[in-house]
Amino acid sequence: MTRRRWIADEVSGTHAALIGNHAEHLTRVLRARVGEEFEISIGARVHRGRITAIEKSRVEFELGDEIPDRAIPHVTVVLSIFKFDRLEWGIEKCTELGVARIVPVIAQRTEANLASAAHKRRERWQRIALQASEQSRRAVPPEICPPMKLKQAVALPGGTRIVLAESEQILMLKDALYSSSGDIVLAFGPEGGWTEAEIDLFREAGWVSASLGSTILRAETAAVAALAVAMSEVQ
Image (cartoon, rainbow, N blue to C red; front, side):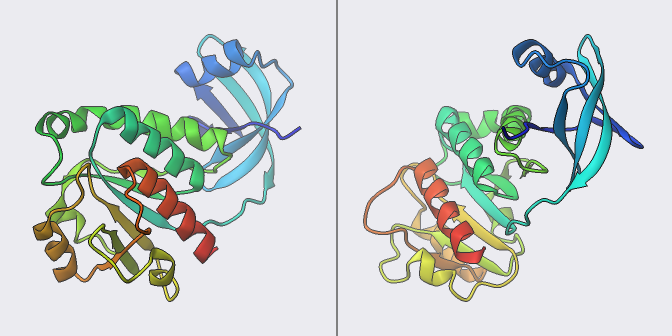
């Protein structure tokens, strides 16, 4: 059986701990006991960890040998803000696929009520990413950036920066990734897609437009599909 992986909340020397709801899930839901072993992630490193103490809202581990972990490409997803339930599904699935960073963006077609509420949702998005990281056995969760405006997002650095656009008729994402170098950044529009002015903004900043095909996808579906392509092409 594959050991469950947990991302430590506290680390001190050869000891680590889970606290709060994190610890309660391990003890109440999974009924962990002293002496059981799990994989414990500390930054970019993963160790074997044996439970040494269980208290209310706290589980302590003694750390053992380091476990080799596979390297994954560094991909940033720029995700225009759309309906929160679907956005959160997209965050969860992108995390499972190995995204390194998620940048929520306020686009021209982002609904005003969603844009105003987005900053308050960041902590929830970080929790979703943490849980999805542990479920998918990642060493670290992706960075969830504060929501920003598109003018800030187009200035993000990256060796290969691609905006997914319905208006692109020629260049497919797979081909755009063929000669990719350095970190990859993928940008996805909101419901209704990017405006022409936004596409011009990307183009002026040096981004490449690419397509996922003729089928019109929901924003969260496009993000997951494109990230899966990117991960498979640059592995």
